[in-house]
Length: 319
Image (cartoon, rainbow, N blue to C red; front, side, top):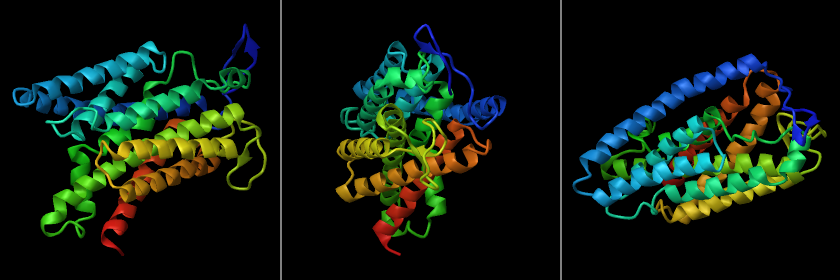
């Protein structure tokens, strides 16, 4: 986005390589397909939570309560549109429900790294807002859209659902032998989930901090200087900030997800791979107008969790 100043705000003018109409269609398809999958998984989790409410009433109500609070809070803070906040609540519910032990607190779930992700991305989005507004790069005042939330966070939520369990079991059946099958799949899913949260945090923070304080960025393919906001451009400050933020999420997520330091390291490394893969897609497919930013973010997160799954498979079982 770009624009001129009008009454202290940037007038947003489309300046992406992809045609605006194509970008809009891609985002709508992402919401229709992945958003529908998130909604179905949320409904199934709610049904399961209801069936266990008699045995674990405190936990069941806590999961629903924190998810509603998360959605309401993001909307009231103008961090997301109403539709985006609703999807954020669903994603929060899936992450909390499927990473929990029902007899323990909801704090010992993926809710904890998710809360840190929200805090870091919220602060980085507002950091240097005037500079970004002057350059026409600031986020809309009404917050992130539903497609942006789904592009960045849906993969983390889907990684811990039964769908991913079946996928991991089938794709890596050679690893799942004897009595270690269920245990290995569950650990893999948690590593993948944390990876997705790390990548989403690193990507957003690096972009926002880089645009605000990174100065003139360079293109990741040839290291030539380009204008701020150019697809595939990176800055040293932005990249460093993103990696640090991702490391914070990986570290904080270790305890609630019951991961070892080595497992968290796999998640961090894969998340950083996703961060730079995002820039690579931006410098190639996005600059050519083939993919919009939402699909680039979604694809980068999928790539990161794929790297995590492969990395953990090699880490756990060797070559």
